[in-house]
Amino acid sequence: EEQEQKEEVEREFRELEKDVEVFAQRSREEGVPVTLETVAELENEFEDLQSRFGPLIDCLTIPKFRLKTLQNLLESIEKEIKQKKDSLVPKKRFQFAAKKSTSSSPSSSSSSQPIAEPKISVAIVPSVVEEVQKQDASVIELSDRTSQRFSLFPLPSVLEMPQAPVIQTIGKTLQPKKIFVARVKDCLVFQPFSEYPIGQITLRSISNSVLVLPPTSRSVFIEDCTDCTFILASRQIRVHGTTNSRFALMSGSKPVIENCNGLDIYDLLELSSFLGEAFVRSIKDAFGETTPNNCFTIQDFQWPSNLTYSPHWTRKEPASFSQIGSAHLSFALLSLS
Image (cartoon, rainbow, N blue to C red):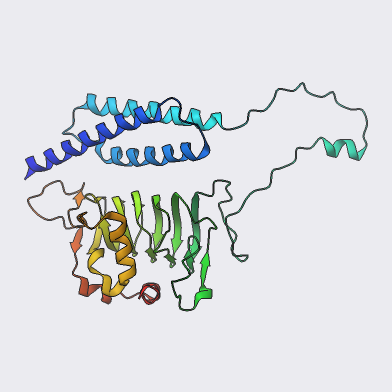
């Protein structure tokens, strides 16, 4: 069993090496226009590769020179992407400093003050003031909230919401590439559908909350969460420092957990009676009918042996999903059914 695990780690690392080399060649192709959109796509893919490399960097079974070689390649790619991004920022023209005027007229002194550029907010609910005021509308961020219910961008009109006014919509864009949720307590984040694929989701420092999220084409990273229920689907799922939480998952690869405890794992595809046929169908359509769900093939970095099951997570049967006591979850299930 231990040998099998070593072979699995080696296989993952070889795949990562290959993916990084292919990405490096593609990111360095000449003739590809450098735009905000193409740079954002490169950043998304690079972050996905980094998230795959992170858990392997301290692996003792992989030779150090191979780890160092891959790390150096990733660092060089990161610098090149930053250079491309910097090239899109207009450079200030050099100007000689103006001589100080001896005039003390108010008009001359006020005109010399720089004019601040207006910030763009992604909030569309007047009562909600967003922390993030970015020009990059492809990123939606929700942070520092307590006891509220949110959707991250407009929900489809076909979804009949009970008590619709209690759902606050955070972002205007229908095509976000990244979602970031942090420092949220006793909240519902309800975004089961997305017309366009989401590249990456990051969830950090969340407690006593329910998150229903659309499928992601790359990765989901969860860190320092407790007493939460996550309903999500992704090609890669990594969980760090999370305790006493429920996960209804569709995972295209083996989920990775580290420093976690008390995780209950459900097969999302078996929960159509709770989550609704439309939601489960959208997950199957996103991944394809033939893609296996690897939600129960979890790699626990705190439990390296495959001889016994990790005590840090438990496989749960679909029927027990109804026993999760949460007003936010009941609201979400009622909305999906």
